[in-house]
Image (cartoon, rainbow, N blue to C red; front, side, top):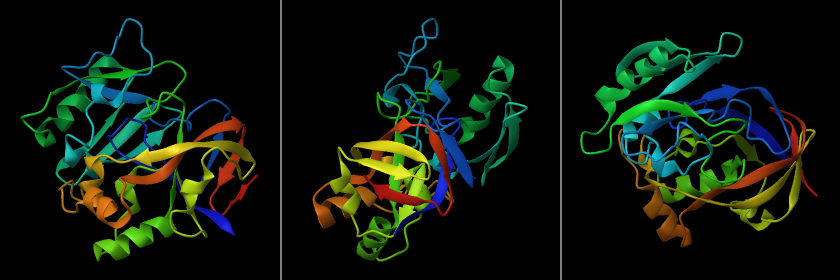
Length: 251
């Protein structure tokens, strides 16, 4: 039986993860409060006057600034506030929709941003969808079986937090999820279509506890399996609830 083991959202793209016990997925939407905001850098082409989904290259992210991977976040939905923690920074609480407070997040991350990369500039958001890495509103699904296979190849336990997943599952063979492309899956009472494999970037080489690059995950994938893919993207096609321990059934 395939079951849901972990749920995560990332309210600000590449700036922290938050574990959940349950979530309502809505057809045609990303996970609630997942990548609602993003931090545009000084070279970004994001159009603040006509905001819409934009490619990840427009934003500060772990692929270019690995220390961001060590951020954790907690959201107060009623107050619309985010509390950020990082091992090398003081705790910060802001409302990202208030410009002065959003600027505090940019300033807060400045000490951990590489000097040779485009500097973070401002917090932005697109109406009605999260700033996921796909032009469609995706849910990232990762398998612990595949992670164990990668950990065996790496010779050490690899943290699931490196992979920025929304839904983690267990109870299937390693890499079996790659055979699901084009199929529908029932997760809890929600239904998704599995759209494509997730090709990974250097963000996964950073330790989520320290933010230091310490494991060549991309080389491990390439040498072990001939690709740089880990996990699959699904798209919600029927609204429903998902909680820890729910079953995933292929349809």
